Length: 388
Image 1 (cartoon, rainbow, N blue to C red):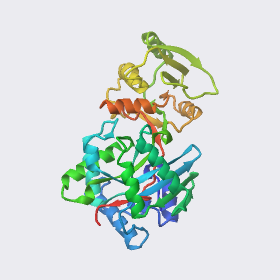
Image 2 (image 1 turned 90 degrees about the horizontal axis):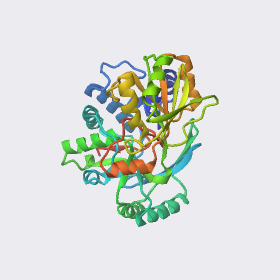
Image 3 (image 1 turned 30 degrees about the horizontal axis):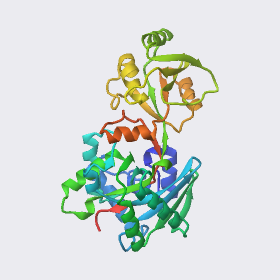
Image 4 (image 1 turned 60 degrees about the horizontal axis):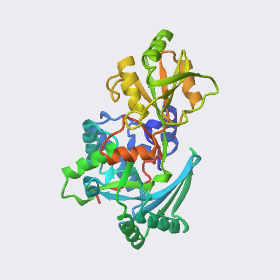
């Protein structure tokens, strides 16, 4: 039933999933995948079709709901690592008090749109991902509790075709109360993924202050040491630059970085302050001589290269700027250049968790799409229904 985001499927994959698996949550979140509906995606009418799909799953008894309020322990194992944490509702008051540390700006238009989505559909099927610091007594106690729970028999244990294993323990009310009490001692959480979901849930709560069901935020919280942060690369498309243009750029920025050519086989940048640049004229290694913007390479790239050299003023909205996940190998990035001569790629090293925490603690923000963070959570595995 649980599915990846529909945006991660190709058209053929999406069609195959919808045709072969009637239980896939894709039928809920992608109601126009197999039927023609008279509703524009993103409209209230479209959201009502999503709600109909959710209600159909409920009517068919394909969804189970615990009789009592509880928590779940979820473990995800993949070739890249294993993480285990708590799934439950975060009180929005915790967020309002500034205890959920955020590091990205959000767009008001998207906040309002998703708040309307939540209100119309009546549920949230995608937890936000948070990391908790491990340098405190509460975290130590929490680790001990999780270890004890993981040693017991799980309620659900299955693997998906992307070689990821999912294991879930549903806690009894007494266990949940005890674990919740321990978790309350965590001084702060750091938001890893889901900034717009947080903002829109806050908006939903403010619209409905008397509705207790809309004052909670579906959350998956894991130890910060189990969070996987990858680079998030920049691809500039439909902008051709000659070899002379690149030479001119190197000359203009000769005081800011050292440049040396790269040869195959290509490897990813090995540290912060190192960027790999791939174009049809070659590949280079840029080593910054001084950190920029608290050491965030993407900030330096925006200010020193993308704006003056490519005239990309708004990194959020310019259609010439694409973002590529750090799951792509260097060879795959170079292959994109070989197929398309009108683009270049800036390959970045991952931002460190300590950098994320420092920026969040100081109320700052990272440049848009600075981190590709895992684990990625599936839709429909955990659902918070507002209409109970």
